[in-house]
Length: 406
Image 1 (tube, rainbow, N blue to C red):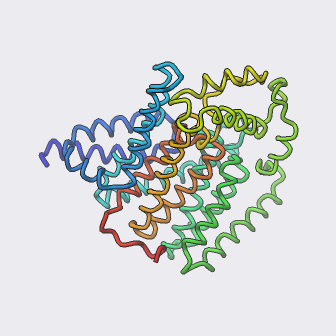
Image 2: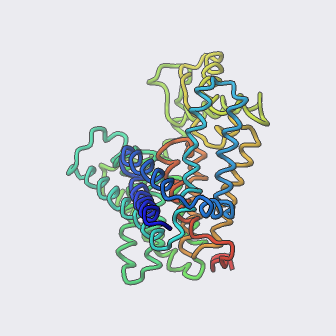
Image 3: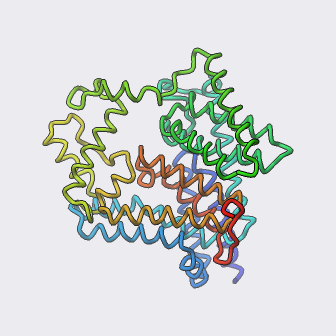
């Protein structure tokens, strides 16, 4: 590689590490590092070699297929061309997966990218507790002590970070108790400080995955999880100022929601059920290929107005699967699930830790997608695509399945 190309390649890797660090940080950070990294990636040349890596990687090609399908959906969309194109660009973050796969063939830089996210989450964890303690300003405590992104995104990131911290306690015996304490603080943060329901639903699923994937140290893992659960209970009982975990408020919210009433009569859980029912009604009209890319806001508004609902302006239904079917039909859902399955299969060809981390990431986005349109959302979508690309970059066709699959 020529010196100028080598410098561009090095700069692209540096920008990628910075972009991964920026995942839980203010959105403006990623808006700087990701375009800068893509420009450096283009300037580095070696297009033939990069395409060879992408073409030979089933996880990268699955992401390209889904992105291409959204492009095809613009051709028959009932939305205007501008809205259809804007809807397609919402999924341009899928291209980060093949870009990262083609860029991080070097293990040193791959490890730096993984560490960047872990240490960024330590910063987020510290900010959440500092806000709770009143040492950092926080304007609206009724929506949780989140750091930078908001209650939903931060709870998702923190639930995944809890998994990573517990996994690190197993792979780093000298610092085992340090990482268990960090995991405990992260779990408390998910349940009570950030208090986002998506993260609260994710946490037990990720803990079960941890026990399942670490069968050789199952008792040790179970002990760590038990300690976290006991300490969380003690933490809650010892502090009356902590709010009740919002996951226990779902049934009440559904019962009190008034979809045709004033905004004060709406509830978060009730609105979600309303979105799901209306979206399913739209899907029944075009089940196979959907209404086309970018069509959801317009067709939902028309349908909600016909039913007399007070809330008619909606950009997405807070469910990635329903949004995919509404736009691309069951064909789109099949490709979405294919991508997830390809990524899950690729975990077999990674190291034990990376494979388990990728599975936890897929589970995070898979469960979270039931309550939010995570690939559609910018922050959560970048979270998945960047980290999936980092882990998948360690896969090679000749890789030996890791011990979790033996």
